Image 1 (cartoon, rainbow, N blue to C red):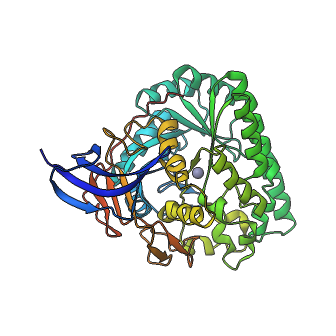
Image 2 (image 1 turned 180 degrees about the horizontal axis):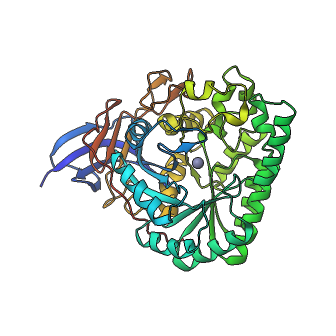
Image 3 (image 1 turned 30 degrees about the vertical axis):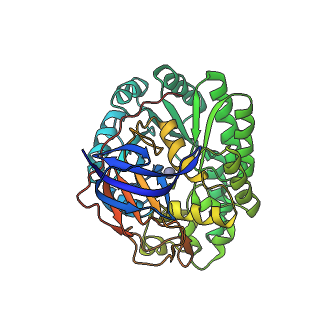
Length: 450
Ligand SMILES: [Zn+2]
């Protein structure tokens, strides 16, 4: 039986090694890596190009309620946008509406995600602590959703004692707890005081959420995790002080994982002073240049495990409505469409090792969230492959695949935009264009084993 597709002479870049080989795809799988002499239905020259494993975005919010509006990408448009950056798998979040159980929120979200053009798993948000929710964690884990997210900020934040209970339950059932790490009561107070004083410009979004609120939440969560001997994944980390606490915890053997996002690796709080500063409002806020530099260092050293996008896009119209009222601007940025290229571009600029991309954007998300057959270009794995021509450059400008008409990267020239993207051997992107309209993503049950 011939191969369906053979990619000839390509530089395969995995998390742990890079080498030149042919990749043979048969059906949905990578059948062979090495020298391939057999014929193929289709052959692609990989000369001078890179093959990365498909990008796994462990943090997206497709079409979620946000303040008085909704994030504008649904699972269809958001995954078309993601495919453009090489994304072949996302892990999105359930939304627990009033009266929802964990199970009902999970079933509804899974139904919404049927529009996805990439494979997907779901984190289960816990934002209502109804009687019996701890038992429902077991039921939803049996459906393959084994990562649960709680918040130390917002009105639906989890009290410390319940966080401990949730961690105990997660440990019992082999699940992983994700945390939005900000101290909500301090933030609520500072926001209120700034509003009373008439300090309403976008800058005050950051001023109301100082670094110590992240550091405090990180420390508290780590101490409880260490006590329970469970594991913890901290989403969208932004600060040197916060990540330093993670580093110390890792050194003494606490199982803690850290995620950051391209926006925190590119922009500082100076962005809030721009005329379009309100477009950058998301929580946690952008920080100082020394934080950005430290995050890159932590990525290089491995303290930061993953790069996700926190993709929660809004349009200019949605954001402009509250231009000068920081606390009313819907929180979130449109990031997924240029996620990997933005990181690729910086890695080249900073002369960092290229395997940072497969490590933080494929291998680690697959390993941490238990996504079997994903995260590495390896025989037997799903044929999720991204092909990049390192010479290709493109200026970021509309129109976008995302419904949002804003990109934080607008005007920048990026490298690393994929020429080809395969999901399980099927074309999502062909010659830089989305071709995956017939491709259906499938739900992935998590097999977490930390
Ligand atoms: Zn998020």
